[in-house]
Image (tube, rainbow, N blue to C red):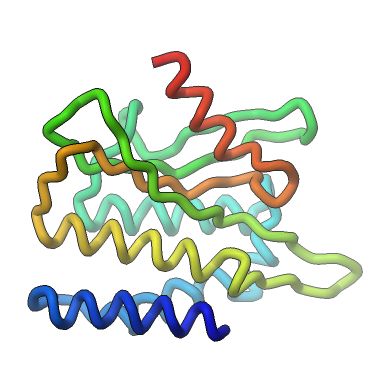
Length: 177
């Protein structure tokens, strides 16, 4: 919780003192975390209905702020793994840089442990708070109309709790580019 509050304070201070913003970062962070940790999402276990709902939420946030999809017509990057059944989805957006061959990846995973014997593992610090910060950082850059030198990639990873599969999938996409 201390790490989360430090993150909220740092983001809020940079937004308040850097330039005027038409949105309330602290309220947005809280709203994202409340949604991502809600019992409706059942802990966001990779491949679950709750994880798909979280991915849709992130997709809608990226779309509403005007972020552009990365390498696809939409924000979803579906993938499978040899270790788990099912199809998983990273949610990936970008802000195009002036240099087309260099990237900075800012990421967080949105999946968590799910439930076990009726116990809900909501994952506020692992990693709903990181996902909330990712969304708000993307919003900050899109609101600023910032044109970076390197393309900024905002990646919300799935299937990280069970083996870092989402980040590996994104890394593999760069190898095939």
